Image (tube, rainbow, N blue to C red; front, side):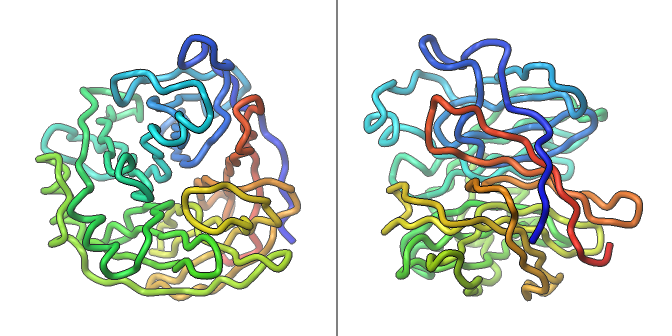
Length: 307
């Protein structure tokens, strides 16, 4: 079992919206860039920015205009459901790279992503642009059935996506996109079906009698991919359910699972950032409590795999 250590809670300097709590609750994607941690939440219109070290409150940066309803069912229906966050290389308007936030695609309101340019030191630098994922996700739905994209990472010449297959009828899948085609699409604000290279289905096993399903991804320098998975007892990608366990795993460069182990924390892991430090694979992790009153935790752990 992987031992996790609490690092901090994700408190904010101010609420993202009037009447909301001053913290990130539904943390769903995590990226480290320079001295900053960037986090997307699946129930927000903002990107949260935290210092990598210390426990100072984070700041919110708006990705999309508008205000989400406060009533839980209405908010769930209207939210963009950003579930994946990854680092991109240089783009035409982002010479130092950018963050890419992708939606789940689990409803018609969940097809809009965002590109956020970065400066040379990893700080935000430039205008946020939206990305229309409708055509790409329609193609993936035809291939995989109900969609729930939860992880994304650049690995070699691919933009690799992880689909989370909730419930016993869901499909966990590894989707490889052509990176150059995806970059061209992102520069014009649309990802189409032409970027898809391959799709492969995987079974990750069970925790507490419930299927484990992909929830996020982070690349390693040698082409491997660290991923998180959660076992959530739910019938589909829309409804929340009881969480029976979470795990962290590693995919080989060809996409084959080579490591998977449960974590000791009783949380629904939704975000991971992996680094090789001192000859070991270190990970930062965030979780979603499915409760807006609960601040999401930031955890750290070391994986028992070759660096």
